[in-house]
Image (tube, rainbow, N blue to C red; front, side, top):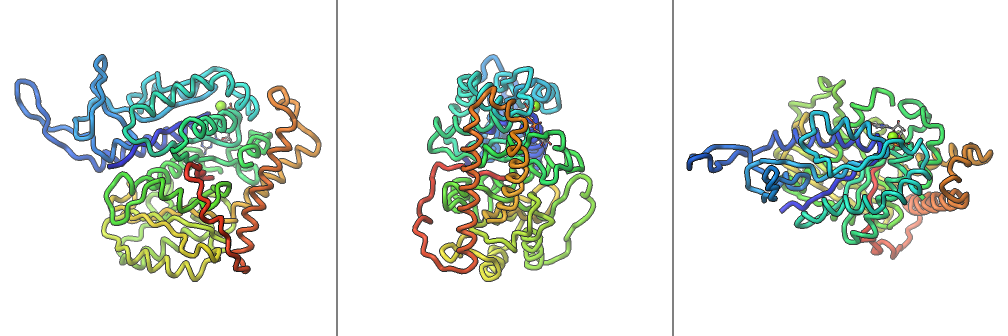
Length: 456
Ligand SMILES: Nc1nc2c(ncn2[C@@H]2O[C@H](COP(=O)(O)OP(=O)(O)OP(=O)(O)O)[C@@H](O)[C@H]2O)c(=O)[nH]1
Ligand SMILES: [Mg+2]
């Protein structure tokens, strides 16, 4: 039986990502819906869509108000609601969601918003709004978590460039860690682009907002849809049948060998956005050739959702490979894993560090598709660039006075140390992957209640 996931979307980007995500997951479930007979008026029978087990991961179903009685899987879909909390310190984006095409999925009691925003200031989001709304957010989360039979995980969607998603989002992650110890947290974090081009050139202080967390042109819609696909693919094999089912706990356990090294870099193949939907079909290829081509794409630079060097040139500490499509043989995937074990640089203690998921239900646009999540030292490219941009401002103490209205200057130094520590740990594991065969006992030190974080 699938287990529930509660989604928290924080700030503008988080809420816009959330919209794309709910739109996609609704369509995906509609495309795979089953119908059943339900009692109609006067003892008659009628057919209607059934609230399935697989839908219950992301959605709840209940009798319409005033009864509001929760309905179990197998019931007729009556009042379908997303298991979600919509949080922002401005009201524009959340209100738009509540007026838009997805409005029936959210009750207003699932939302929490203020009016004036955190003004692109991490400290304002974390300390100012965090202190003010901590209790209310805890209550909001409880209202979604308590009705779950077996809560598996929290999804957090946010950006790291502004003030609310990054600051208040961090606060939310801490709250979840404190209050739901055994429940995994999976954060989808949109990073400011490296070169300041694209949508985030508006946020000069983005490096300040990004740094404390880690101790693109083309418009947001396409990008948000790619993120939505990633999250539906990530959970496909726990929601739908397949030859190799994986749930989020297994993914986190396998991909996060050390608690601090929990940054997972995603790749998708094919990457099909609305703009490119008519290109790139691989119809007609046999499965073995197709899977090999998808693997090649995922480990190259073009299909990686973070702009870095190709994954295949990095040290890969652990990797998840998730395939969606009907009738893809496990042997085709295993053959590629065997090849990757030889080709990739991996630490000697974790050559087996692949987690595979195989889901029979294809993604919406493609008959066969693949997503990979790599825990790799390639992430140091990204952290290094955030660091450089941070230091350019920090050396002159530029903009710091905006932050010290809400926090001590010492927090800056602590976050610098924290990020340097993570980078060093990645570099050390990466070096070991490059040669020295070191027996590292810490592989067993898996942080069972740890968080995974997918970066874009
Ligand atoms: N991918 C993507 N990025 C977005 C979206 N909206 C904003 N961003 C990026 O997010 C960063 C700004 O963060 P926002 O999410 O707007 O800020 P916020 O969390 O609402 O915080 P404040 O407005 O400062 O209170 C910039 O880097 C933007 O480019 C979106 O819908 N998709
Ligand atoms: Mg905002």
